Image (tube, rainbow, N blue to C red):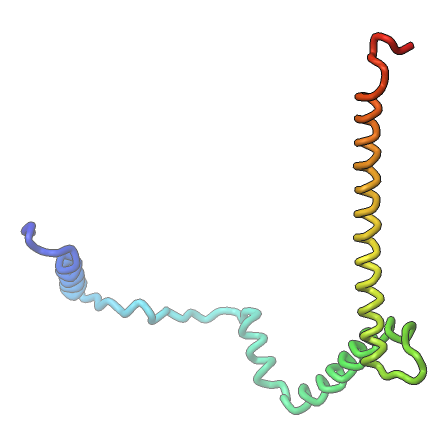
Length: 143
């Protein structure tokens, strides 16, 4: 092998030598994608494929439609469940949902305001303690 040959040409020559050696022995190398199939018991995949082939698709589709409709009804019921609390007799579902969202947003903002007020009071208390320490009598004169 000379130093001038590229690695790919080396691999090509090696493959040719192996193939020539196999032909001399009477063996012809099969392509890699051909897999030897041996008789086996049915696997779960084969079982499922047979099941799908034997299944009547029209019957399956007719059974799935009521389930989809039931899911849609359930979803719409859950969507409007809490909105009915805020619903006035003269307004529709969209207005009730809007009022529900506004009430939830108001609750969130109220919680944030309360937290801010508590934080402000805590800061005032800390500042008052610090000022009392500064303005109070020295530690040596306290009793």
